[in-house]
Length: 94
Image (tube, rainbow, N blue to C red; front, side):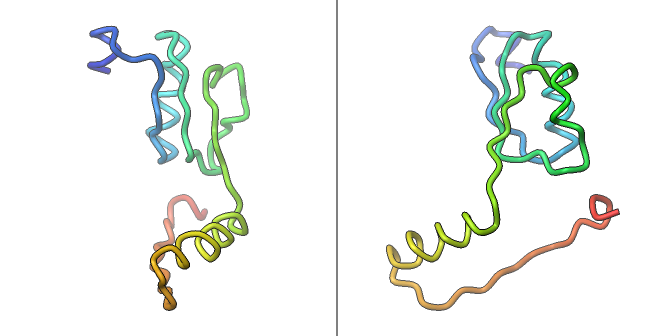
């Protein structure tokens, strides 16, 4: 918001989390600043263009992520062992 107030923002990148993205994306038409985010989840109706007029989400599939990691990241660093750490957000799962 400080960047907006100082007229230093042309675009907002993120936020990723649903509640934060919803708040910023609702205000962005008023500010006339587009929002680009890799997040957005599925618990919000971000496809509602009347409410989220200037929001662009860059979503990906799990298959795309696995392909990128296995074909690009692992060979680049010569890594052979992968561990996945995940947390299930109970509030979003319901």
